Amino acid sequence: MFIILDGRPAFWYRGTGIGNYTHELIDNLTTIDSKNEYFVLVPENKKWTHSPRNFTFYPLMVNDAINFWERCINGEINIKLPVDIYHIPQNGIGLNLREVDKLLITLHDIIPFRMPETCNPKYLEIFKKEIPKIVESSKGIITVSEFSKKDIIDYFKIPESKVHVTKLAAETIYSPVNKNISKKFLKYNYGIDDDYILYVGGISRRKNLITLLNSFEKFIKSSNKKVKLVIAGNKSFYYPALEKRTSELGISSSVIYPGFIPIEYMPYFYSSAICLVYPSLYEGFGLPPVEALACGTPVISSSATSLCEILEDCALYFDPYDETDMSECMEKIIDDLLLREKLIKNGFSLTKKLTWENTARETLKIYESL
Image 1 (spheres, rainbow, N blue to C red):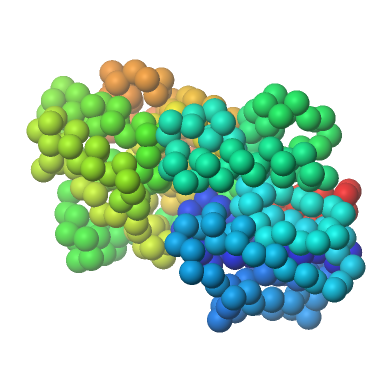
Image 2: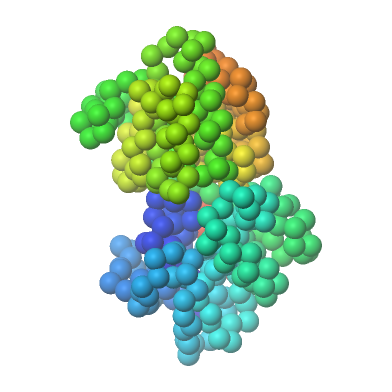
């Protein structure tokens, strides 16, 4: 087969779900598949670390669009080669390739259709305009959980046979780091010198962070414990609302916003944390909890959408709309040592099953089936 893969998100969006997925998929395909020919689109002046003979990395001129999605759809490319499959990993938004019979997309979720009020307006506009046409014209759709598969089938009224599931995984960088080393690293680089509960992910309404702040305020009042809350993520347009609510609750001295954390620093943040809290209202998969588990950090999680399916018996679950339930989970995870040990043990078992090599092998089976 001759497969074209849009690899640009691996460079543009590294450190986010779509960027990490694209990077790890391609990286593992270079390791497991020496038979098929791959033509991987990358931004100009970017190179892949590992480049076998059957992989060609084709640099595309970067246009001056600031928005990621505008970059992806800005332009058309003509490739005079017999293309068997054109795989777009970033929710199907990509370059227009002429005469491609088999378009395969990875549609991670359909949040813009289910929760439009939580999306960036520009992203929402592009998604709602382009995705229905792309879904209709694609020969196959990959998604990341059984929940997302059902959601996509129900919304677009398409055959079940058209949608395939390949679950995600934590990268190999995510493993336990000695707590003393982690704490020294965070104190030196971020000035964090306290015990803390950690949130990692996007800063948006969908992530339910206002409820998290309300719950954390209840927790520190009822428990009287000296614990901080670290909310790590890119300070997006929604960030001022969080800062305002933090001030209103009188907990500014107990909440830390370090911004976006480079991927190589994340194991230190996970390994030092008391636990990861993940209050999201909607997830197609939810990578941060899996990364935390790989670092030996227990997880308390929303019970919404795909999260129970993905995390199985490796998390303590709460109703994301119930501030008291979330607050009580914070207290329980700190006080119950046996529960912490059980969740950590179960988490290691789960992350051994969820690997990027398995994701790549399942994806290769889908290529062959098409």
